[in-house]
Length: 390
Image (cartoon, rainbow, N blue to C red; front, side):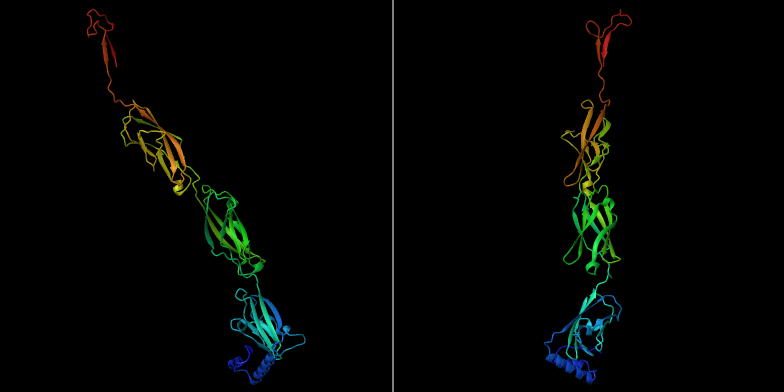
């Protein structure tokens, strides 16, 4: 049975009421010890520090209180202080007769890393006992999430750092998280990891850009990150990091050909389609959306032609006249829809084919003396009588 020392004076009666099962002899001994302890309260207590590894089975011997008594002093009975919330009464099994301390259950350092109590002998010798629970490598580093996503703009400067959530390990000192590595997915060694130890002993982690990122060549990376502790063997934790390379407007539209040709009849009616130009942009979103227009400063100021800004289809806008102009040269621009757009030019040559839209004019000049349409009766075969021009 444990004997509990909770205080002096009036608290003795409270403790007596709580332990009615004590026999009268033990109660007398307790009162004698209490009075002796009160009379010699200035005595310097002994100290005893004990250690054991966590996760040991219940019943494991921790130590002997008598090891904290002065040399030559022995005790046959100990009174143990047991303050609520210290865990002494629930986690430890103390034999008051022998002073042997055992574990009452499996101890977990991450729940409680030490125990403190005071043992008093019948001769008022006191021993302040401290039990330290040693850490063992019973925990692996754990990332807050098994999978995370991250976005990095392409063309980001090499050496730029992006903080990631660190892996936490409930163990301490060398048995907590000691480092990180990328085990898979780091194509072209595009990234590396840097760490720093915080004042709270957490090993913080930065993802560092180690190569020029080009979304048009690789738009994403799937990195497998591993955290490891200092145990032997090491315990590890893993996280998958999905890195998306964000687009920037680093590409201009590209036409599928630099010059286009078309031939149309001069009698083609306005509203008819002539040809379609096409350009593509390797960027995405608005950065890759191509819009078309005719550069009116450099070509077609009279607006004989118009172009659909979305499709690139060129349409006749006004009637043509072969006799006035046989060839039209257009400068077509393709620009993306970014805030600061990129522009590319292409050239369109349109040939106008003649159409029989004019009646021929005939002129006849007679070779008579007065130019009248007369022929002499003496005219010989083969003789010219008139000149005809068309």
